[in-house]
Length: 418
Image 1 (tube, rainbow, N blue to C red):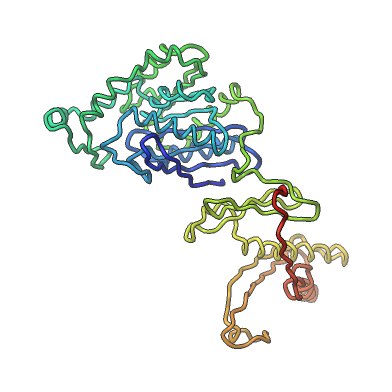
Image 2: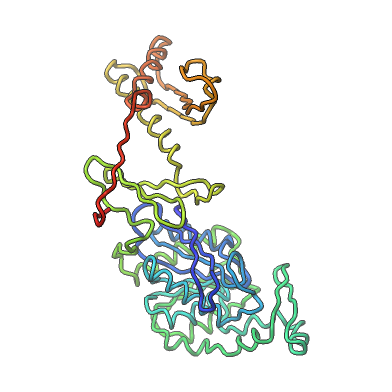
């Protein structure tokens, strides 16, 4: 599915790293904002799986690293629960500016607790979902019990969480106690869905009960039977996404307007007989409108792309392969040859002219080489197979590649629509 790497700045001026995941085809029905669990990153497996499934249901999903985590700037020791809430609001503001304001907020573990707090400041949000979330931000303080005396005495301590060291300062613990949850849920006034496993040994299911009891209707609870806290089984994460998407449809209108001018998936219509490609700042992802058919091209990650689609040379190879297989079927029908399928593969590379026995060019010049492999399925004689290979060389794209081609480039008048 198409993915854009995005950057936005939080209230402290730190650049936060995010990934905006888009549906494979068509415009998103709405945008969702996903908050990961405590000390995790945007790339945690459950977050990726849920995002994939939501995109399949037509949602665009932004997940990001909180300040001091993953690829985001900032020092973790300087962050706290309030700064995480602020980061969520900054992410929502980014979506509102560059894409479309989020209508669905999702949070996993402490990310869900932060989402419940941030939802009061994100007016666009119509629906909120939590997954294995504490009802109180202070729930995580038990992780630091053995370090509390050191934190109180020296002001900070290096704490091991999930096998990694994190510096926790006294301000972090103090900030957790300031959260108004769960009492503030009475004024949330947004649809709420609470997911929790009855066997969650990290955040007990009683937290879900407290969230549910404090919130006003409409509210729903889904029990994640046999799921662990991190939803490490893909089937559990997919189940969450499937139920979540079905539930959210009730509260989010399908307007098809989850895009803005300047977004990388807003593809203008091409003129009759033309193919339009548009590449915007920030990467190589290119949206294409070919006679009303929307395609995506990109470059490999190794050269700065996001691999959201084939490269331009992949598309050129695809044109040759498609034209060849069409031409072979057309010839077979005309000659009444029993051809069930024509499968054509094309590989592209560049070689030195001296290595090409059939080329007129010599010397150090490099030539583009397309290696085409044809597989014919059906009841064909050897003579028919040989003739079909000759016909392959007559496909229109093949002829275009071998003929003299003129490409004229002109500048469009300033102000003209694209």
